[in-house]
Length: 377
Image (cartoon, rainbow, N blue to C red):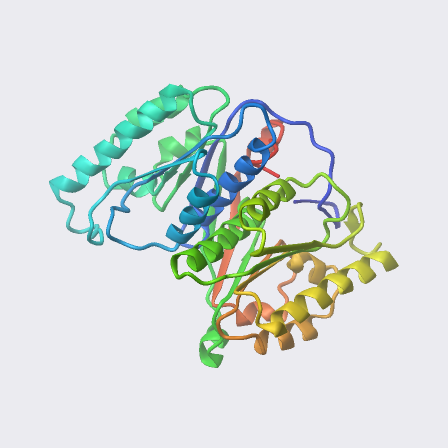
């Protein structure tokens, strides 16, 4: 989503690029690995209906076997749903990594993982390669930055590379085509009132809706691992009409998990301009909120994604008071993920246990590079 003038643009016609780009997600906030998984799901969703398909490698550094991470459940859901499209390699200790006690084993594991990455990049077998937590290895000197940069610089033309983790070295930032930093925001009110399970992803950077898709995967995967049905509702505002490739990703989820994913969209097939809202915009926004509010109160869903709710409220298409009231009363074990930019933070931001602002430092579209279906939108 991009903002033009005083309007918020959500549906535009785009030409499509063929050249793969290098994405870097770093920063202290949450959402980096989940955003990468969202891109993976989008790519798979489009590849299912294409002649060539989309094959993905998830290479996870500093995440050795025997430990659990938030994204493990999401990856399990991906591998069960699309076993022929996902390869995963984990490297690192079985104990937690201490940055102050680097040992020879850490360097050996880093090299092992990087050798796998180099072979995968050279093979031209993958459409997307995710190098999760590569940045801290480079920051600690466990891998040579110059070698990594040269390898990425000479990747196959169509290959998308996604690099995550804190501490990105400057040489890699200089090479990257996209750089989004996740910055955490603290809200003491949510701690005092004991509200759990409200996450907000906002800001101008890439990774908000893609992170939400990763959270949907995570919820489904948690249900698989516990033999329980973790139902997910994906509610999208300001996205009327057709042509959104989140639809391909969501369709892929529903194909593999038809009883676990519900999806509703609302909005006109047009840009909603600030100060020029139409009656239909209010009607569609309220229709979407009635669905979301009923779902939240029902307790039937373990995860409810409210995609682009922030700009909907910011455009004054919905009253913030009813949203605050519904969130205050939500079931404790229901997780709510809210996304989208906004000029003015609504009051419900104070209820969030996680609030990450995605800051865009660099984006290839600013250099005239076309966006790509399944990766950018």
